[in-house]
Image (cartoon, rainbow, N blue to C red):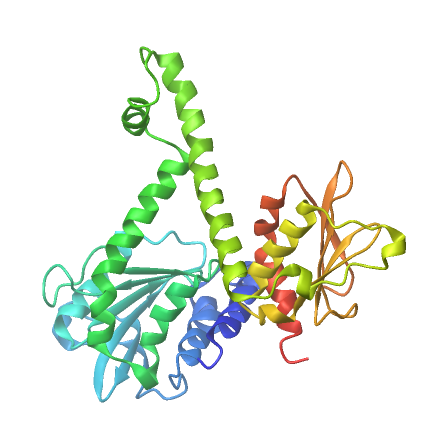
Amino acid sequence: MSNPEQSLRLLSERIKEHSSQMSTEEAVKTSIVLPFLSLLGFDVFNPLEVIPEFTADAVGKKGEKVDYAIKIDDDIQILIECKPIATTLEKKHLDQLYRYFSVTKAKFAILTNGRTFNFYTDLEEPNKLDTRPFMIFEMSDLQPNLINELRKFEKSSFDVDAILATAERLKYTSSMKREISALIESPTEEFVKLVAGSVYDGRLTAQVKEMLMGIAKVAFREVIMDSVKSRLNSALADTEPTIEENETTTDKTEEIITTEEEREGYMIAKAIAREVIAPSRIFIRDARSYCAVLVDNNNRKPLARLHLNRSVKYLGLFDNEVEDKVLIGSLDDIYNYAERIRKTAAKYVDS
């Protein structure tokens, strides 16, 4: 994966645009799984390397197969089972992988519906597939840290020990993240009691607990957002020239003032796009009716437009031919359009 983020992003966009045509298992294999294996460096047209409909006589269930087996250095190393895109991946779907794992030299197994790739190994008992994945890779949420872990599965650098070195940490980190995410969306009564003990002195009646559960949900989100903003601002301040050095606002005679809100919106857009394009290429240019975020300070390379100097606020997006103005309630809503901003930035990478 010479440019893994871009390759995966294109695959992710394919899923978003054509998922309705991927209702069958075969469609998922052809449209997603084989391209996914290809970008990892495997020759999907070589049946001695990517083996379709793999069977092993020792399994004991005649005629049962797994969808793919990946052979590296003449040994089966990875087993893959595919499901239709609308399938919710569950423990019951592991049956074939579970049996085949114990009778081959495979060290890893992947269960996927095209959107989600669950990676398994044998952390709990040797040669016995764990029932919980050590890594969950979501095509709709391309996290840089997981892309780095995924690169360890590239054919050219495949190293069992390197993967296993971080597998246990990944397994429990991902599980804890899911639990924390569940708490954010729906704080439990036990959690509220734990936190409320140090902030609320009164009796925890049913009405009070209901109130505190709502407050806990809001507080959770604000803590996370404050942390994200702090990190972004710190990273931009430490590694890049100041906005004043990069920006060209306008002729002073026009008395156009770039507001703090516009500056913050610019920094958010810049932080999002920096995953795709060098941040030094991203500029701010203010105008009377909007504040532009440009690549190379070029009006012909718009990344986004901030329409903030009014009671109703909009974000202008340019992933299509013309500006698409979307309503936003606050600057935080810009994060909801991160993929579209990155898609726009990708158009200018080589220009």
